[in-house]
Amino acid sequence: MKLTILGCYSATPRTFTNPTSQVLEINNHIFLIDCGEGTQVELRRNKIKFSRIQHIFISHLHGDHFFGLIGLVSTFRMLNRDTPLHIHGPKGIKEAITLQLKLSNSWTDYPLYFHELTNTESEVVFEDDKVIVSTIPLQHRIYCNGFLFKEKLGDRTLLINEVENYEIDRAYYRSIKKGKDVILENGTVISNEKLTMPPKPAKSYAYCSDTKYDEAKITLIKNTTVLYHESTFLESHNHLCTRTGHSSAIEAATIAKKANVGALILGHYSTRYENIEMFKEEAKTVFDKVEIADDGKVFEY
Amino acid sequence: MKLTILGCYSATPRTFTNPTSQVLEINNHIFLIDCGEGTQVELRRNKIKFSRIQHIFISHLHGDHFFGLIGLVSTFRMLNRDTPLHIHGPKGIKEAITLQLKLSNSWTDYPLYFHELTNTESEVVFEDDKVIVSTIPLQHRIYCNGFLFKEKLGDRTLLINEVENYEIDRAYYRSIKKGKDVILENGTVISNEKLTMPPKPAKSYAYCSDTKYDEAKITLIKNTTVLYHESTFLESHNHLCTRTGHSSAIEAATIAKKANVGALILGHYSTRYENIEMFKEEAKTVFDKVEIADDGKVFEY
Image (cartoon, rainbow over all chains, first blue to last red; front, side, top):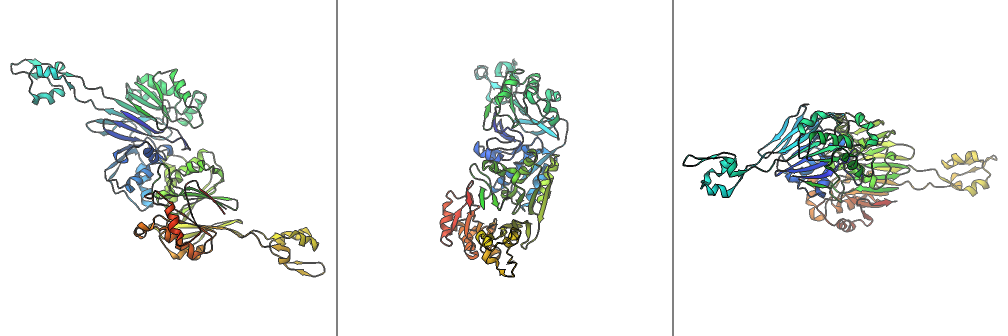
């Protein structure tokens, strides 16, 4: 599982910092999460192949999370994309994108599907045999969802010495990897545990931005491998959190601790701060496994 | 008169090139012309004070000329702008911007005025005592205007030795600068030419992008100090000009020559070309006073 941070600052793009966007590679999928202005340039800079992005998840319709989407949709067309693109985001996103395409008298030559979200309960928004993606309802100033990306458990691993020892026909290997026991010709049952090891643990990634401190989501993200949680403010400005619908570094760390996640990545820093290391320092007073996002940084798990 | 090129490449923003946007400083005004994605970052990079921009002129609603506008409008709000902003552009621009503001449940705290254009004849879109701005109807795939910025002639310059020689009262200086003759107490008429020099010549700037080769605009831009004319293609691709509604370097130079402009600046290069110097070389075969735009370049006249 690999996470590339294209942008992780709040509010406005600046000369050396970008608004929110990130790329998650998980079980052979590449997902784009949020798409602030300039995202397409950051995709190029980070050498992410445009054509591999088939799903884009937009948390909410504040500009620093979606103003780059129309440019990306248009560029895909200019690059002669032909594979489908799915955009998952709040209701209204379709109108915003299609209006702008209409005004330029253009349309996409590739299939473009909008999956508009209105639910305030968690729901599955994408699923195949490798990954399941569901929403994490967040509390912000406008309708907003985080997203939980979960690998599906793979097959169990054959203990090849054991299956050969029992002279099991290869025709049974597939069902054994799926967890089935084996009955030998003499009637002896060989339990699956003797023939296989458990599959690699399924990894998961929870993206929570933007949100004020809200414990309601903890059950959804419990034991997640990695949690990205916004931390717009340091403690010195924690009085701004409630009013603006954002979290402090300590609040993000508190959620991480209560959800017992494997690691916490902080981001969505207010551009008032010159030194983002302070976010890590403050979060560490609550939760130890903290990383800080920065534009262009890559995390692997 | 000072022109700062924020971006001058066509189609999509890339790591080191930007779509169209430029800043014209003329007679104490600062005008932003077109606003491709990333313009607000280029404004910062070129140290243009956001608050000094009160008028934005958008040629047409293709993304590489206006996808940066919503971000700039939003950023102005976040920077607590309170001065009015006027946006001049094709009909539809208001709906595109206001829809996106509405979706983010926000509005500008500063007065925002849209001046939507539908006229296919040239018309005055802004005028005060210093400058007059009018449209230059262009032939592109969608409704498109260039803009002609003209300084107004200033006052004539007093020849101070002469007015003192005639012992003319200071109370008359203002009217003399405006071109009035003077009648002395003894009835003698002193013609204005004896007392003043002509004002500095008024400068003018014509922005023509995007457009195919079209001589109809020549009368509008005749004798302009500087013409910026798009040159998307080199001769090797001139077969694409008509189909795409764009011009070649030689076509831009031909317009410049026929309009007898003082200087020609080329821009809006297709991103297929690695070396933009070729645009200058080809244009020079037709018109000598050619400059080539590039991102971050500043021209002064």
